[in-house]
Length: 342
Ligand code: SAH
Image 1 (tube, rainbow, N blue to C red):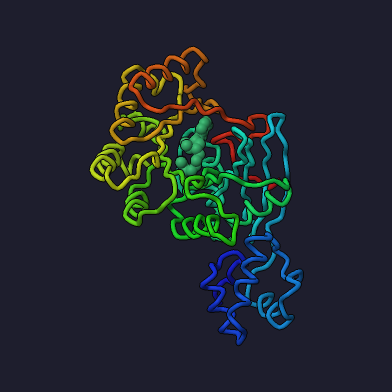
Image 2 (cartoon, protein in one colour):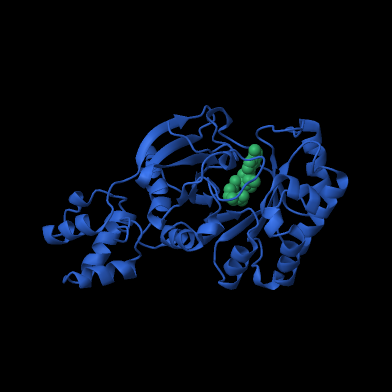
């Protein structure tokens, strides 16, 4: 028997089909959709204007147990992190960040990750599979209800590789932007990828209206190969070639290049120049992220080298940000989310 869908897996159209299928009037679909996506009510028994017959059908046909909050940690800098337990004992972490007066939720798209990056703790843990659209959304909804504030920005930059779970992620983005949902602006939703070229092609061909962030980290094949398995399958030269050739399809300001600064690895003045030049060519902005934990011979660079690299990139006339990594003390910073069982 197929798995029951998660309560938050369906869009409005699918709710309408379901409601008609069980012999009720279509307008009920919108009422249910609003309970779930406007009021963030995940307890079906509380849908006060919905007849018992419909509620019983839903309770029978859907997976209705919300993700369990196993741990909720708060950093001194305002960042918060939740460890969720989902269906089939999948564990995922989600981060709430207060940045520049905006509330951002950093959500996971997979439990663990199917790719291996040497510098990322998620990769060191177990991969437990893709999350469904509902499992992606409930991270935002449950967090928002707990914090009690608005969500202005969502980044799919938690555990996992979103483009390896393409359909579920795009449907979740769509629902986050929905008028009867949280109505988060298209420009305030960002999907981040380790450079999965087939997924990037699909994203661009489909003209997905969300921001795309690409974790580049090095433009040199040999260096990138040392730190990211993705480089074996999708070499950076192919990715760059594709992006340049399809530049006209990338809407301005929509692309971000993420670049991890790793002492002794990818921070020469030549690296800075090549990076700046590429961003200029693609009208992309650059997020520089200092390495958050040290591995092998690779170190977090000192402030002086960070600044020198930043200035060298900026010198190319591009928009560049030195992205701080809030939440370090609760292991909520970039690359620190991991599989754990409490
Ligand atoms: N798989 C996607 C989504 C994860 S996003 C991707 O790779 O883009 C997480 C971001 O944090 C990526 O840019 C990732 O490269 C970065 N990151 C991973 N480990 C890190 C570390 N130790 N220090 C700083 N950033 C790290």
